[in-house]
Length: 318
Image (cartoon, rainbow, N blue to C red; front, side, top):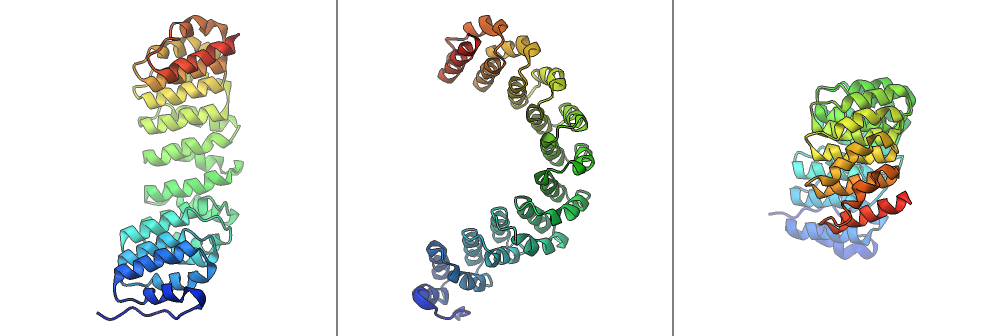
């Protein structure tokens, strides 16, 4: 087997570079790890060259290594590797793109938005999301009509991170997407808006057939903070999924919903510890004296965290 030799020696990293030329892929992979650990910008040209290594395990390590650098060269390497035919390499590169913070990386990522593979398009939008690039808005809005639900969800994430009131119609429309994952992202994304149309769309999502959409909607209603949501959130306390109940309790606590105290108090008797604790926390946030008797009955709860929360809630009533 012939050695893979795209490298030249450079400065005091000569020894590592020498191992990058080794015929053994395992040796080359360890050399990539060593280059990442020294965390020097002058290591990047060697990592970029190693992204062409014939061994997928070496390319995987290169993708992981690029995540240690927040620079244009590293972003360029990740953009290249996210299109790798090896799924593990491509996934590592996609994860690295999502960690980039340099706004300049947006220009390198955007050409991927037209890639033939849905995975690559989704990874590109995932990378653009945290960069909050205004130039990404148009492509993201267009991609909310993509045939692939993962692409639609990631594009929706870009729109949501920009938090622009002008995008409300698109976000509201996404709460009716055919894919539950997209609907859940949309319900969560609308939490930034104080407009009644956003609150109404999220309240409607609390009746979605998918429990994860309902859970996202309950959480979002708590963050929107409109008193008009109290009735639907109180109804959601009877949801068949405890996760939806828990988010609804949290939201009702944030809304200081005194009208929901009787329904919240009933969940102090739940068999699920997390619900008993969340119910006590919600009653403490609401701080209505009417909840005192219910809380006192559970001051000796079997779970120490619940007991602690009940005591805290009672202290809030005085």
